Amino acid sequence: MERTLILAKPDAVQRGLVGNIINRFERKGLKLIGIKMLSVDDEMLDEHYSHLTDKPFYDDIKNFMKSSPVVAMAWEGYECTASVRVIVGATNPREADAGTIRGDFAIGQGRNLIHASDSAENGEKEVSRFFSDEELLSYDKSEYIHVYEHKERSGDGRDS
Ligand code: UDP
Ligand code: MG
Image (cartoon, rainbow, N blue to C red; front, side, top):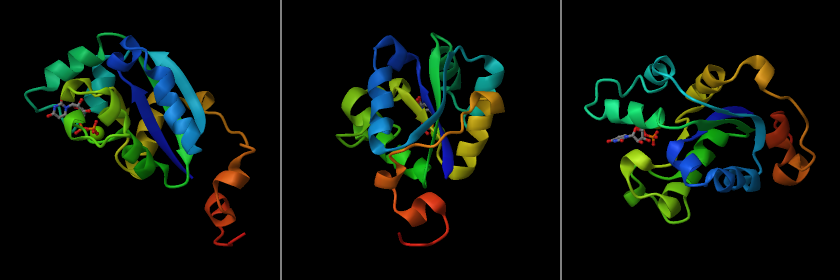
């Protein structure tokens, strides 16, 4: 099972869309294994957005991300990082498909509501950046038998 990080950004908190965002991943069948509200600081942002620090718009992103708290969530699921990115939609909300979170609720590129890890490797890294081991919960989800085939939930290749 992969682990992936979602941040409901300050615009999602301010616009009251956090519950809606959580619901999108719950109804997909993903398992919520950690959640907290926090204010992000420069150090965290420079690490989290290290691929953007030399961009002209980076200061705007940083100021925006510090403008109010964010809600960080760690989700777990089979190949869930790619599935989550599909639900989140394109970075530019004006190009995001209808039905995606960004496509349905956002229009400005710097106000696209949500961060989602872009690869399984980054998912692991980002979950560890935002959550300590103690903040991540391990538990059985009873619905898994109806969400996954046996081979997907167990990884042993068996069909049923
Ligand atoms: N961003 C922006 N202008 C750009 C590109 C990115 O404001 O031209 C912001 C946008 O909010 C985006 C974030 O920087 O969500 C991180 O960029 P990335 O390319 O990682 O996009 P994402 O993974 O969030 O889709
Ligand atoms: Mg990204």
